[in-house]
Length: 420
Image 1: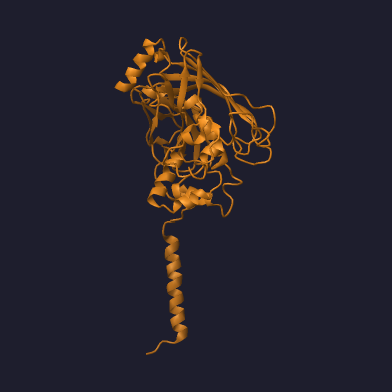
Image 2 (image 1 turned 90 degrees about the vertical axis):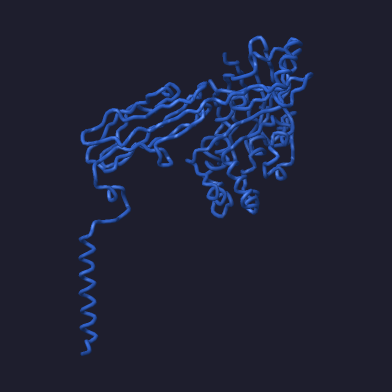
């Protein structure tokens, strides 16, 4: 017997209504909030930006570590927690606050752990713990910070022979080689006509205090010419030059993120964001020592600081006389790895403004005052000068540099003392 169209539609409607009722009775699987995911015991979780509960940092690091303190379920009352750092490495770390309050109805808060870059010679650990909680809460576990020791420079046999030879001539580099503590300042010019990252937009004086620098004998040294290399945190500039690089690029919200810019492709390809943990090390080689006058010569062609593998050497081939730093950037390490795997990616990088790391940070020659040439504000150029005191174990430097499009020459003034 044939069923009428009316009866068939009515049957389908009944089935549909039954299905809707059945779905309504099933547990919700919505993903809008973590409350919909978790119905068990309320816990406190400590999480790093990558979602883990452990991190390994170098003893040389001073980069802040952000820690999210999270509840698995919301509460109707505010939750106040007590936190502490314990362990051998705790003295090398500073916790932003020992008390954290998560407001009623909220799921999380944040604390920051700042390493102090002390001379750790063996691997050390510290734990961040929640030591006191509100009733009805359990802690999922501690967060672990492991500090790997400082890199150690040991002269090769050939370098030791040179050092012994210098000593025989009355030039004792033992007071200079090794770790130094750097103090000083950078007078930054800022920008009038360009809207770069907020941290670098305005003129400012940035202090360098207690920074760690590693001084080695350079491979360029000869029997007649002592030459130094600052292999880690040259002149204490790591944090400041990273701030500048970020300001021109990933913190440059107006230009770097503009629709259609190839910079967006670069960031996506290498997973580079404002919050990604990146390293930045400034190296300075070929610092020539003149012991008789107590002076240091340290300027040179910009190209001399660029690694042979730097993919924009051709684009930055103009080579003014600057302080020829070498920049070891985790961002650029990933960029170069991507280019090696996909050679066409180089074209994307080449068309990305502000990616020219070397000419961005050292845009104009400093061998003489070129203020008029760059149409900058007069009166800020200083002559580069370096001095060495072998008896006191100190180094001092004064020099200008011109950041891309900045209003005038910025000036670095630093002094370092060998750590005993």
